[in-house]
Image (cartoon, rainbow, N blue to C red; front, side, top):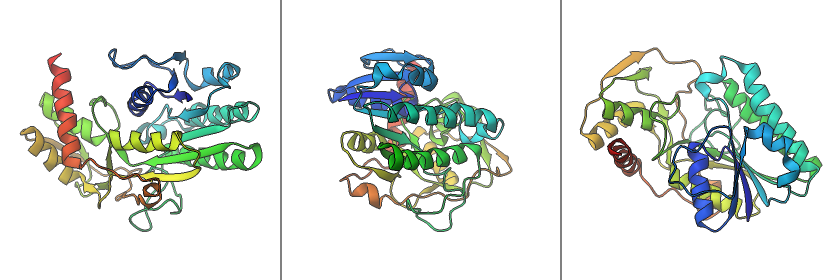
Amino acid sequence: MKIVVAGGNGFIGGHFVARAIARGHEVTVCARSPRDRLDAPRPHAVITGGLEQLVDEFDRYADADVICHFASSTVPATSNADPARDITDNLVQTVRLLDAMRDSGCKRIVYLSSGGAVYGVPKYSPIDEDHPQNPISSYGIVKSAVERYLALYSASGGLSAAVVRPANPYGPGQNPAGQIGAVPVFLGAAREGRPITLYGDGSTVRDFVYIDDLTDLLTRIVESDVTGVFNCGGGGEGTSLADLIATVEAVTGRPLAVTRLPARAFDPPLIVLDNARASGLDWRPTVSLEEGVRRTWRAMQGEASQ
């Protein structure tokens, strides 16, 4: 297949691109930032300038079999600071992309949404794809709006769209100094001997999915013609942040110093996803949280020794 991956140099995009290339696909990466890993498989081509550049030059890529839209310029913790930019960068450019696709021969798109931010505070748990969407951050509002435009263009423009709502993905190669991802941030703190910041009392429950399990589901969807929305969680009942700290301490053998701050308004207290719909694609998560944390720690240790 010819695959264009917007956000292909990000954490999720980079892992997906490596898997897609290994499976023999011709992959074009669209990204604003250069590759983090020089040893990563080289894509067929690279579009610099991000999603806007892809839209401006779309005629050059209209023969693609599928567009994988994994790009976002914000995370929940940053989006509320500048909602106008969030809308301009992520919603407006995505609608422009859908316009370009509607007028081209490429009608297939797979969009990476959010398995937490679009739902907001859950009304029941585990959360299935039909749960009401009540996002409490600009990030979640924009993700939800993109999903609605995908539905609109699918109905009126003949697009074939699939949406994946992942839980909290983690794994090797994730930035331990970033603003998203409790697992890499906690592991980075353990490696460097610095304190972590915990918002709330540690009872917040999150669903963590290992990167290989997420890219497995993405690959199954990209290589098929399925449409609709699919949750992608880690399975089980979720993990509290207090229990995650205990797991990190057990894996690393290093205690974590914790700086406690009040809970943040944009953080739902409980997010656990129902994977039943994705299981219909013969998919299920295979890596436990403890094993995933162990793999991520080993990779991080290897990076530190290089």
